[in-house]
Image (cartoon, rainbow, N blue to C red; front, side):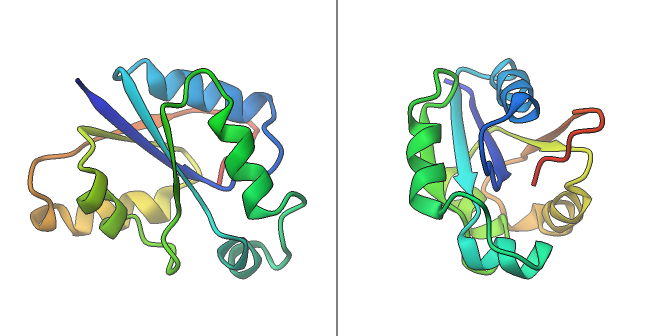
Length: 127
């Protein structure tokens, strides 16, 4: 089994999110989605999400491409979640450079080599 992991807010599952999730799932056969907590979104964007964490979490659980939904890190770091769920591939959108840099900086802390892939979602921002 090839596990793929993604990170994001997923505040109202729109076309960009669906494209991102479908693209990520093509890299493996088990997709893990880490959903950002409300306080992280407030910190990053200056306002709380439209849908609360429970609504966003539950909505993703019903999405066909998603196999597992997990709570995003309380400090907005992907490192502990990658260690815990041990994906083979992490897929990021082009506007998640801050996550990419943190993962690359911490490669030596993972139990195996993690592949990083980037999906171009065009004008739609995925956080």
